[in-house]
Image (cartoon, rainbow, N blue to C red; front, side):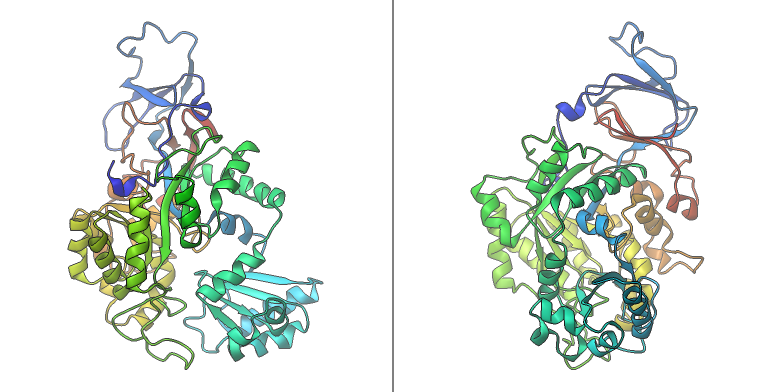
Length: 514
């Protein structure tokens, strides 16, 4: 495994790997002929043999549990390489704004919530990039009165508040007439509204983790903007053990991580090998929907309080020493960049520091920078479903450049390591959704968007297994998913809704519908 992949949790033998030996009999491996038995023991795949054969060195399978999977397809367990897990666990409990097509439509949803007796309204999922009317605090004030209202955009980079909420959070002067906070101001406010009691949030996280496991997933790279190590240690102690988790470290916690000797890939004591140290996350620009992704070309039609080229949120002369400090401490950089200028500058920083790592999102790129990804060994950590969400807003604000957006095929052809994810809750925490978007570049019956940038199902699967590849093989972790369909032959629609019969983590069932 390359240094650039070290932030994916690997795990070694431990309590999490203590499942009893198991034979998954009568399995098929996508792309391979014949039917095989998979022998799992000690948290590993110890043999892959034709059905009925006894592995070398094993005299009998007597006493070993045998489960016939009846010709179902078995693949390595799936990873989502970019999530905000607490946010994902919370969104189902917030006012859903995803379908609102105008500020007025959002106001109607808020009005209904207030009329229903809510003493505070927290919503998630609005996308205002194509609205004919602009969000303003007056629009919310008219339907909410003194009930505080905080609405978080689908991309997590903006939030829209009424006057009561702005006063509560001491942000009236920051928002102006729009009531909208962007980037760091938004992040600070979101941390305040996310202050949920540990026991309550951990219960929500446990439920969400089970739902994720039911989609064939065995692990996530967690980029919640807080000190996540202690959260996940506590959760594992409380029995939240359906996923492997690597936790990201932000700039505000970098000194602490270094002082405590944390290094990317290290297991966290007391978590049975489930929790590992992830990468150093630094956000260098904004997002497309908030019109803050840092680009070489200006955005058309922005308001007076918006930046025409987007925002460089961490200057280059600060970014390089931060990345170097993390690298020197053994913490691999995982750097957020969405606009083409942000990606170019971050690649400059990787070259200056002389380390590998990942660029998180890598949405809009200059063609010359594709080769730089490959030459520098930088992973492109991309969320393909964002292309489906953003195609229309991209055609408006990145007009004439969308052939350079979500360039999965060009990256793969250049030998760049792809790592697929969701950025949940921005997109659903379901690796099959990401795989389908990468393969089909379409959703909801629409024509594929820049289909020349689609990748083959095998490549999408390999980019979704945390470095395990697309095929189950002897010696790998016994993290596997049992599928009802062949993922290499399934339609794009079937990939999106792939039926999962079972998920095993280190040979232990985390989901079973067999």
